[in-house]
Amino acid sequence: MKRQSRRTLIQCIAAVAQNAYIPGFLQGVIYQGRMKLLCVPGLNCYSCPGALGACPIGSLQAALSGRRGRFPAYVLGTLVLFGVVLGRLVCGFLCPFGLLQDLLARVPLPKGKVPRWLDKPLRYLKYVILVLLVVLALLLHEPAFCKYLCPAGLLEAGLPLTSLNPQFAGLRGPLFYIKLGVLLAIVLLSLWIFRPFCKYLCPLGAFYGLFNGVGFYRLQVAEDKCVRCGKCAAICPMDVDVVRHPNSPECIRCGKCRDVCPTKAISGGFRCK
Amino acid sequence: MKRDRWLKWALLGLAIGLIAGGAAAGQAAATLRKAILICLECMGLGA
Image (cartoon, each protein chain N blue to C red):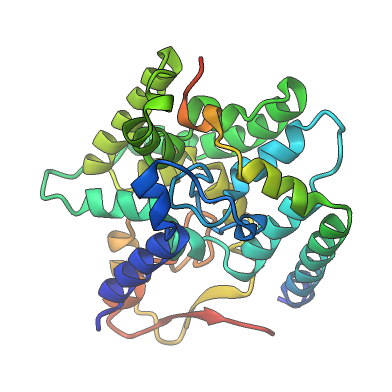
């Protein structure tokens, strides 16, 4: 099986495995068992009827927004663990919202790129969102990212639960429609640009990206094999210059650069040394 | 390169320490309590 087909298969299995509580979808309720003690690696709303684990970003905000002011050691430790072991491999292989954007990118419509002068500053937006998420949770005692921005919450929880459970349908207010607008904007942008949410908005991707350069999973370019053809940089959907920055915080480890390299100079894997 | 070598192991140790410490302090149970309530904010409901 080719690498990209294998990646899609892993993404599908991960999305299903993280949302495998079937009664939730049938009855419009959520899973309340002990597996929700554990955070899942990707952006997967814990209020999704099928969710078996807790969303790490939602859990971080919940822990930070508590009025007792405790350091969120458990959630932060989980995030660092995923970051240092996998980094943004999570984005490329395990995140259900990443899978959705990948599928939308395959719709045969004209594709484009954000101009470089706008793309570069926008890439820092996700770090600003990550910092704001922490600050607002501490100051306002509420999960501001989940409440105002997270499209996964509406897609995976809001839409199914308000459709399946009449108790929730009556609670739709202006915020629901604002979030619906955000979700639709991201869906439409994903048809045109590759993974706009991951590139510009996702605080989880921003956090994991910090570990790409120091974690266990690394890409390596063999200098003696590289012929500087530029094919890797040209095909990279996240616009990474692979030869210069193989472990860029933007790299989601999709492996397209490895597929296209004529001399097989790019290798990737877990390195303990 | 040498710095990377020990840094990732140090981070792994830190992560395990934080998880163990947090779990011992009852934070895993707090995560569970939050995760089993339907989060209206996540769904954009109630406002």
